[in-house]
Image (cartoon, rainbow, N blue to C red; front, side, top):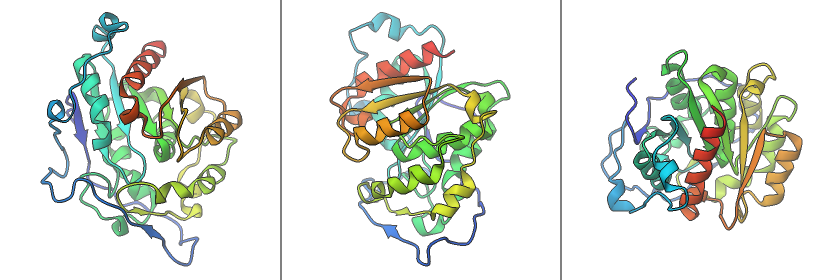
Length: 282
């Protein structure tokens, strides 16, 4: 797979398997699809980023940021019900600083052609990420970034492809671990699904438990950084600290004044934080 700078990629879904539904009835939360009927390529959606947002590299440390020590490849994963589009400010900043950046659409998200009721297992939902990771060269390293619900997805990628991830960044994200049961994290925050944008199939707890199995040897070999969104209402600060205490990462950052959608409320602060993390964990 050829990776372009500032590409937003939505690979075709891979049909996965899951256990019999834990719940007797599937729940589905509806919302507004912000992209409506706009025409978009099912696999690569090009955003006119300069028209959407005029952003410049922050003046503080601008020289060092615009001339990175080495070009990095950032892979950005959105939260539930959103899509790659939510990263457009960060994509433009990354692009202008000389890095490669790929924002993925997960199953039934963003420009992905599947509808929520077609993605009935968590494996189906994560298949675009798994397909992308499998396409990387054996020694190719990425900085994997997940927001909120995407913490489960990047955890799965850490377990399956640890050799391809230089550092995993959890932005106010669900962060299970080898000794921190995924169902504990997932069931505490199902309310997230009612606050977001595109319909999301609420996966049974048993399906999540089956899909996210983490080990110290693989998941634990990848450096982890947690970024606290100080003013998040969807994933409040107490919940974020609870995950950090139960599954301590290698480093913790905090972006003051940021709401849950950090990439929109504090894009430049998030950008500089991500660059610092990438350069610190080569």
